[in-house]
Length: 109
Image (cartoon, rainbow, N blue to C red; front, side):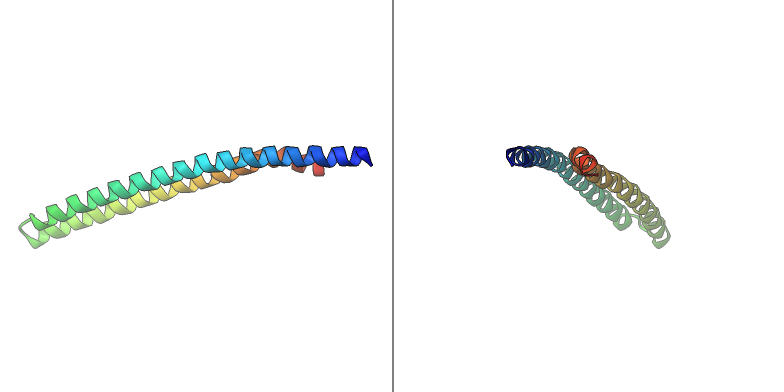
């Protein structure tokens, strides 16, 4: 009976330690995602504002359409690149959150 209690206590302590490690890695990864999203938002706003200023000062409809087309292409490419980067950050977050529990799951099998 005492051995069972000690095993349960050891398992509980190990689970809590791993939970804290997982929480720390999730916090770090979430912060990296937030920073990345903030930087992208800032960059996107600045490029949109610059494109708008160019369109306003273009002087002709043809030039305005050319500027708008270039901006749309760059915005799309930037969005796809950012989405890919965020996808990788979220995948890393999941891996890091799971990593501390690998040993417990291996022992349970």
